[in-house]
Length: 354
Image (cartoon, rainbow, N blue to C red; front, side):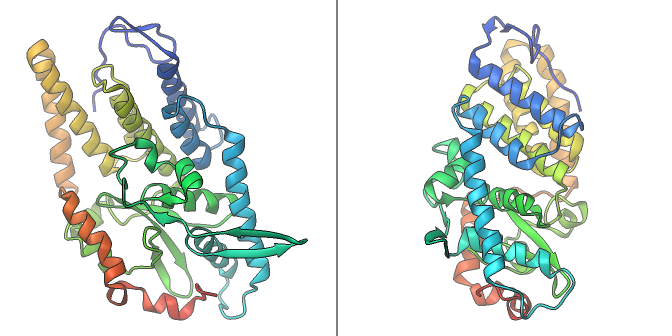
């Protein structure tokens, strides 16, 4: 895949882009890209938590506090550990019980109420709810942030599974981020039941049939791994670079300085079948093509084939565009048809509601 660079574009040290002087905000995005790329290249420790914070802090003009962010994560992590101590395993007898109970604790810290009295101090957390007002971040991009979730106790299918993954890394639990159309959820595995899905928007554990019930997850999409597959830690961090690109677009509305394309390429370097990056890059190239079409037809002619190639690649991988109306209907099905889509074997085997 080609990266299109306009004249005088140098990300980390340039003073101007097409005559535009870098501001502090521009520099924050360059720095964020650099820091996450170092993680992916093995020059820094791979940390999903740090990558998420770096991405969100760039959009917030560097005003977020990493110490405050860490404190919030530590509080929830400690609460989860204390819940495990207060609720010893008496029923699940498989060898992975330690990992299972860590995942139960994370789920309860996010979607349930935990109250623990320690040295006459009440430690507690209330359920994080779903943000129906701006679940796509259309009104305000920061509405999809983990930092916003921690502050408002309202989240979506971006921030809620991100928080779950961060907490899992903190307490040493094994879980995986997974994609569905327009959607991110958590995949888990235990010896007692095998693979299962954790849906944080509704606080349910749906069977695979629910994910496929949207009608936009084809057998080809499953075989190619664009949906319902597990992301490695490296791929999860690489997906943060895609979030960085989307925040950059929201803030600057700039398409021809190559930053967004460079972010997509970095994501795809470490996760070649990241369907969100493939489609997003194609859409950005389409916007570039429309800009160049009148201003620089020769350059437009070089952009178009790469845009077309990405759309074809997405279709070959089994991608089908899902209308937002259909997404809303599909997402509500897990709550409205709970009995139909709940993983009954999981509920019978594991003490989730203890």
